[in-house]
Image (cartoon, rainbow, N blue to C red; front, side, top):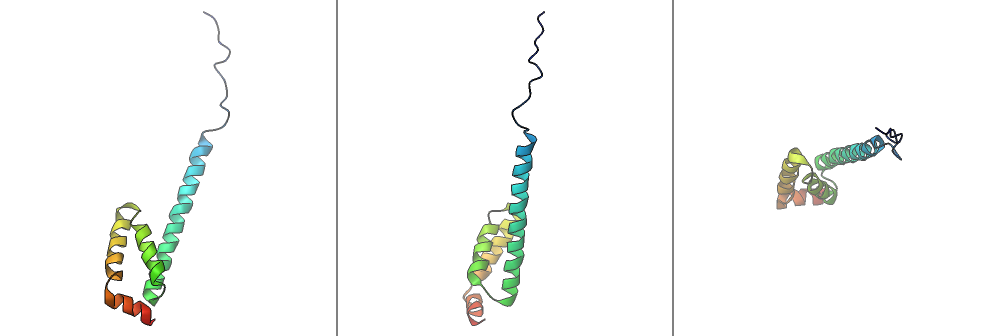
Length: 90
């Protein structure tokens, strides 16, 4: 049997870094969506920034089951005419 000395070759880069970078980007994205959702809830309480709240409700529909439910109910409530007038008065 011939011995093969090339069995211990090193990879050109560490694949662990790819997972760390993708995970970091995902974490940053989730934190950003969470902060924007909390900001939208503050705006709903103060009856300000109707368009911002509407956009965040649509973005929440793109995230998981809880986000879909939250986004759909928010969009239903925001589409009512009396809610639109409340935002316009404030």
